Length: 342
Image (cartoon, rainbow, N blue to C red; front, side, top):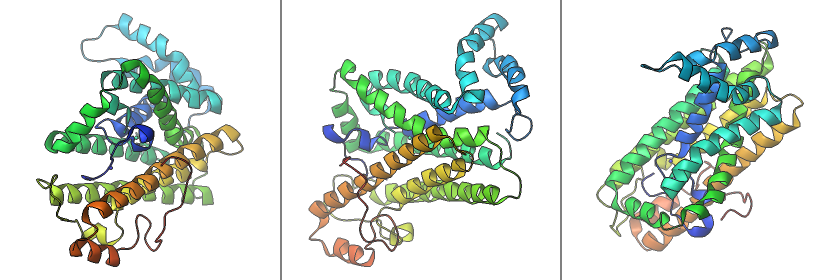
C-alpha cells in the first residue's frame, strides 16, 4: 500500500510508487478500521446473520462516541454514515466496494491536497479478523516507519518537497485513482468479514493458511525495512555500496517488497474463499492484487537499475548480486511483467 532506498518518484510513475509517504497503508488501515466499526457489534466472530443487520446499524452510533461528545452530535454522525455502514454490512458487492472507495476518497483527497506525497502509501479471534488486524498492523507499522525515515533521511524530505510542486487541483485525479486501488486491495478482507466459512472445512483451512502468509509477510517486511534503514543510516549520499547483504537480503535482493507481496496475496486468498459466485468481488479483489503486484515488481526493477548505475562497478555489489540473483521471488531470477506501470 515498504526500505531506506526504495521509491524513487517520477512524474509518470506516481501511482506505482504509492508507498513513498508516511500515510500509505495508513489509509488502507483507516478503510479497514471503518469497516470494522460497521461490523464491530457482530458477536459471533463477525459472521452476522441477515436478521441482525438492522440491530447492528441501530447500535452503530456507539462506535462514534468519543470522550466529551454529546448524544445529538453522535446521532447526527451515525445518521450521516448510515448509508456507508449499511453498504459495508449488507449491501451488494458493488455497493460494498463503492463504500470502501468513498471512505478511501474521503481519506486520500484531503491528504493529497495538503501534500501530494500523502496520497501514496497502502476485532475478534476469527480468521477474517486476523486478516483485518494484520492489515491494520501492517499499515500502522509502515506509516510510522516511513514517517521516521522521512524525518531522518534528507533525500526523502527532498522527494516530498518536489512532489508538492504540483498544483492542488491537478492532484485530484491521482488521489481518486489511488483511492480506488486501496478500495480494491482491501475489499477481500471486507468480504471475508461479511462471509461465513464452515469451521474445519477445506475453505476454512485455506483461509487460515492465507492469514498466516499475510502475517508472515508483515513481519518479513518490517524486519527487512528496519535492517536496511540501520545499515544505510547516515550513508544516504554515499556512493559506496554498504548493503545490506545479510539476513533476509540473502533470500532475495528486495525482501521488503517480497513481504508486501505476501501481505496482499494472503489478504486476497483469505478473502477469496468468501467471494462465492460474486463477479464483482472477484474482479475487484483481482484488480487490487494485480495493482500492488505491478507496483512492487516495477519498483524492484527501477531500484535494481538505480543500484546498477550507482554501484555496478563496485566489487562488494557485484559479489552480492552474484550470490543473490533473485530480485524478489526466491529461486526466480526474472520478474514477471504485469502491465504498463513502469
